[in-house]
Each structure stands twice: as C-alpha cells, then as structure tokens.
Image 1 (cartoon, rainbow, N blue to C red):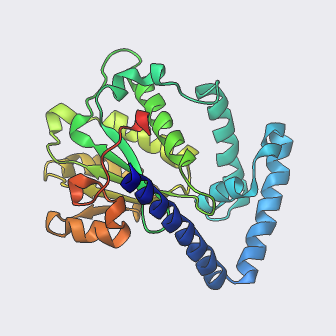
Image 2: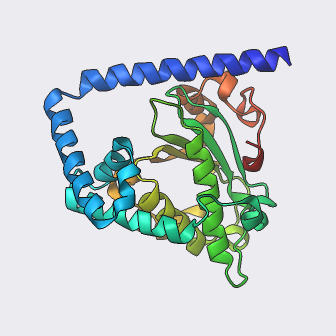
Length: 269
C-alpha cells in the first residue's frame, strides 16, 4: 500500500512538473503577436456564439480556443463547429453525463482501460481492438457512440490543470477483419472525437497492427481531418517499448508493455 501511495505521489509530481514545463515552453515559442491575435479572435467568437446560444456564456476561453484552433483560427468556422457541438451535447447527453447502465454492452467486453500519464502530463487510454465487436442490433451504433462519449468524458476529466490533451494507445493484436472490423463504428467514434473533443488528442499510437487492418485503415483515413492525421502513428513491434518509453515513464507504462502500471478498466478509473 505504501509503495502504491508513493507511486501515485511521484506520478502527480511529474504531471505538475510537465504542466509547468509545457507552460514555459508555450511562453517561449509563441510570440505576443500570435497570442494577441488569438485572443482577439476568441473574443470575436465569444461575442458571436453568445448571440446564437446564450448558454455559451459559461464556457471558458480555453474551450473556445480549442474549437477555434480546430478550424485554423477561422472565427466563422470555429463558431459553427462550437454551436453544432452545444446542440449535439444537449440532445445526445441530456443529463450531462453518460451512465454505465447506458453502455453496459460495451463495458462488458473489457476493451478500454485508463491509467497513468505520459511525460507531458496527458492521461493515457488503452483500447484493445480485438475486444470490440460490431453491435448489429437495432440502436447498436447509437449505444456505441454513447460509449465513446462515456470514455472521452472520463478521459477528459483526468486532464490536469495546465493541460488540454490526452494520449491514446490502440492495441490491435489479434484483430480480425471478419470478427472485429466495424467501419461504421470507427467512423462514428472518429466523428464524435473530431466534432466534439477538438484539439484534445495529443497522440494516437496504433500498435501490433496486423497487415489485414490496413484494408480497414484505408477506408477510415480519408475521414480524418488534416489537423488530426499527423497524430495517428503506427508503431513497429520491434520499436514498441523504446517508442513508448520516449513518451511515458516506466512507472506510468502498463505492465503488459514492460512498465509498472496495472491495467484499470475504464469503469473503475
């Protein structure tokens, strides 16, 4: 127990240090003109979206900035994306959160885990592709979309102060085209991520990807926006541990990849 507490304190300290380092780095790399220009556009965006949806007055500048950056600082496009998100959120998540009872089918498959932080302070999510099976019953795709929101909300809640992003690892070992391939589900998840959690993704590692997965990837890739494509990275098996250790301290890396963190199911995190 003492060892676990010590590990937790070490992790928290590293997250805080990483946040401070990133803040200093941002101040050094972003000149005042860029920051001033961005702030002006955030103000313009806030004025416009509040005239369209008064509930947006409670949204902080960092949230507006993420939607603005997702549209390359285009105020009109960023505002449209944000207003669409507000409308979607009220309709799709009317209670403000997704309960476990609403996504019991996907939780039962034990395919998503969350624990630890990378060196930059981003919470880590691990997805096992061979544990996902298309839900072909009526309403199955909608339940899966709710599960995606359930996961991304929990992951976002773990983002510490000073950070805005999360880190995802998709382990595709054992993935089968006929048993696990779910193009509709993948595209639905991608849409939820890009349209409603913009600029949240730091990196998305795809590991142990079998060659047959590339057939599915070719169908998915065109739907990934340009700002997000560069964040998806296929990692060679021979470089897996060394690549992960470049981003994640060993005491934050899951045991299954040579680290010290046990896998924790998303519903227990």
